[in-house]
Length: 411
Ligand SMILES: [Zn+2]
Image (cartoon, rainbow, N blue to C red; front, top):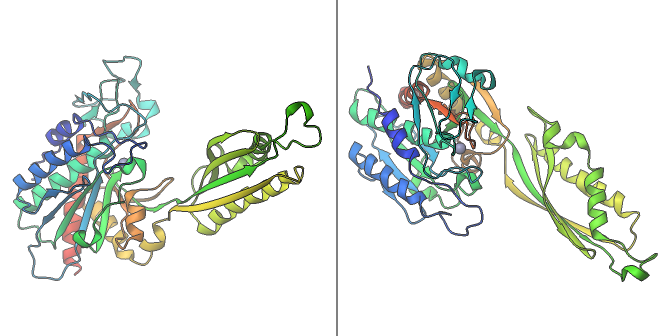
């Protein structure tokens, strides 16, 4: 029987505010993320990971040395330290609802925040478990402090149980994942891992091998300005052109009309005056060809609208954000197969899923580290209703331990 330390570790990590800031230009975006980095390094050193350290950019690296003579690929387990800028992460007061029995969880610091079984499907699997929530005024930070917790406890188990045979296991904790910069400053040479797993998923038993492919697009419209009193037949307002383009984009290609494997075009920012207007879009799809087709839709709509404005013009610039990790994972099927087997050995039914978003793993997969995402038990992230169960985190620890064994067995 393993003795787990997930509950105490998790309760400690969530009380450290690590909110990232998209408006900051520094790495990490907020220095307070290093406060947690220092705590994690101290814990990893105490466990016996002698090379554990925090670098100048706020990344934590550490290694569990191999304890087998076999040549086993180096496996990296990755989680992020920051919490979402969308919801306060200051002064988080975690509450353990021991032996949850399906009741409404009323959060005391704001009783209008009530976590109900009927709103959270996965709560039905938590009867008898210990569910942790925040107190009503902040997020909890299970995204992704549950991942940090699970990886740290798994490292401790590996050090305490030499009978579990494994190759070198690399730990990577990143800052700034929530603002899309989680892997900007990863030292891939230092990491020197062959395959990776982010531990940042939702329901127990899930493994995610697909993310969106993502592009950003900027449409700049140049209109014709004129004194409004004498504008007849002359003025071509960039503001009105921008409005017309937005209304003529296909409604079915919007976030609010799409789900599952459907992609979308989403205007996220607009600014302008008569002479010039700028619209920023994000474009998402699982399929790169469809992603390109969505960009063409923006161009076609702009061309068509501009027919009524013969002196106005536009430019459209597309820039790549990240790509669907499946393109890389399909070349290394064993990464997923072993993940599924590890989940099975942990006593769960493995479920393969796709993410309508990106992860640190989507970019790592294209930086040479194929990296699907495994559950950490996080739920309702980026909100005051966020919750996680102690038992799901324990299952994630078991999954990591089995995964380490499986890579050794198959080598
Ligand atoms: Zn996350």
